Length: 254
Image (tube, rainbow, N blue to C red; front, side, top):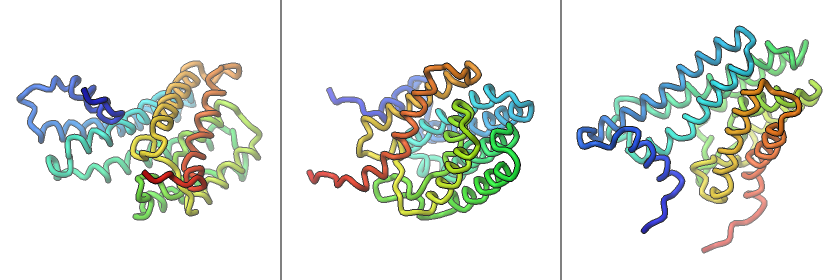
């Protein structure tokens, strides 16, 4: 019996959810993946409504749900070959629109509105995050040959959630925002948890663990003594540094 890969496991679970019955044509399966991706827009709106009312824990819970959906729709899209079976919808464009909302726009608003970065630093953060991310998302060179990201991929939702959990000095937050904004346009590699094959047996569990820690921290309203905060730090450091480490450590030829 052949082992089930990580992406294959996602697809298998989704087939069960769909019933995997004969009446599900390839086109219907492909359209179902587009519909799954589009739910991210709903979760984005729910997160924004929570953010407007300063319900930060609820906002991040919706963003974590959107993050999870974003993690599984790509493998499903490739498995069901949506480009061939449902070409009337551009899945890449749909994904980018939702990612900008959930990864950039809403987290930037939360960072500014929460007061964690006061005065001019708050204005600096919200302008730099939204502007640089718009340019990065439109950059046709954002992917490397091994399906990693070239430059920091604008995952501001992850940084802002960690800032909410740890509440560092605003100068620390300022330094992190400035550094990552510059890193978006540097020749640094950042791994894609699902698509980057090298170290994927470690990277994918780390990404899943980050999602779990993030959900736990938000569920308990970022309690300062929560053990999940340390999990967030460890997994975040790995996800940010793994791609750069791969650039420094040559891959053994097989």
